Image 1: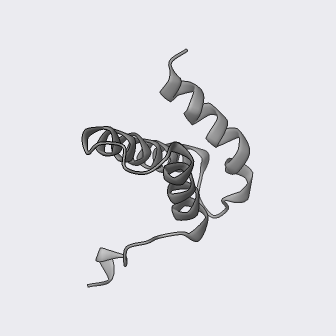
Image 2 (image 1 turned 120 degrees about the vertical axis):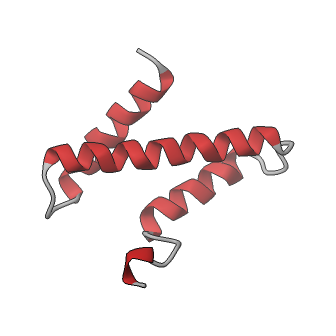
Length: 77
């Protein structure tokens, strides 16, 4: 199993029950969206020279996940 598939499985296992109000299929799409965002952040970090430590980058990602939407919902405009 690939790193991304393993990570997705772990994220789903640890967080799926906490998210209510949407079905499992929608949750899968939501986690896929978040996971690809995380992969994009790591790629950007690698491309721009790894200025932050891995722990600092993980802390950013963890904070974004648990804090919620860092960007205002564009659908509200």
